[in-house]
Length: 359
Image (cartoon, rainbow, N blue to C red):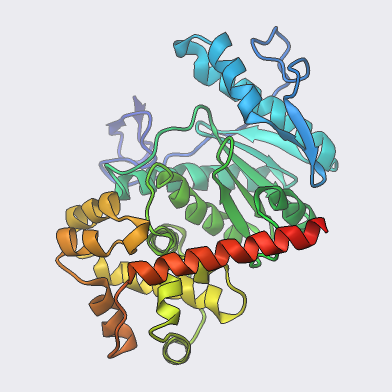
């Protein structure tokens, strides 16, 4: 238990805010010290633990995970995972050079080359964001991570893109400020261009982390991330609302909307990316009326139909009609055959790009 310094109320240790007066509890991050004792899993001695690719030594979690599971007792597994993660990040720190260092908080390990005070504020923000997201998504939050949540803040943009290129297929990809990496040991990577942007990006990517255990339509996943980023991170859009509406009305048609439902429009160049995120935010905001019903919708929504069946069952709402209230009259309903065709076209384009890169 911990006492609130403002009102004196006792609170559970995991709470980020006082349940009586709402005062935020400070997080006390500490710099990660080098381990001196013997390790149950030593990545330097584990054959095949790292593979050099796209400019960085990348851990092979298919090799590491069985080693951890066979070496650690269930009650010690989190400590062993945290040690393994610190070994990985120490290796990455050496490759990045400069002033990069590891700093920990209760649930996070941060690798960054930023001032200590800024690192502490950002870890405190991340802890509070995680608490708020878990509260907002109660009942659907993923708890499958073995150790601490990893945050990688790259000071140089080219290092950031070089790092994340190892997790993408061939071809071009939309510009991004940060991503949630599902593969291997899930973690967040971003290009650090200031505290405010970093804090907002972490909220967005932590929402993806919270939804990791669900296979849901991409528009729903991204829409939830943008909405919670605004609510928790305080992000403000500077686009003129009427101008944005006009852009939406000019861009979307009955064929293009199927790319949105399929999620492929989030990967397309030009206006498609920005307007897809914007439409996802608008649609989620319209659908969130009854919290329990919406959480049931999240649990049931399937990518093959873009969540249409779940919307009818849980929200008593047709997704096409919901979009129509914003875009106007038209056949906006998700169509399974069209969604499948979008996926097949995207896979074919990716394969062609990969083959061209090898040739």
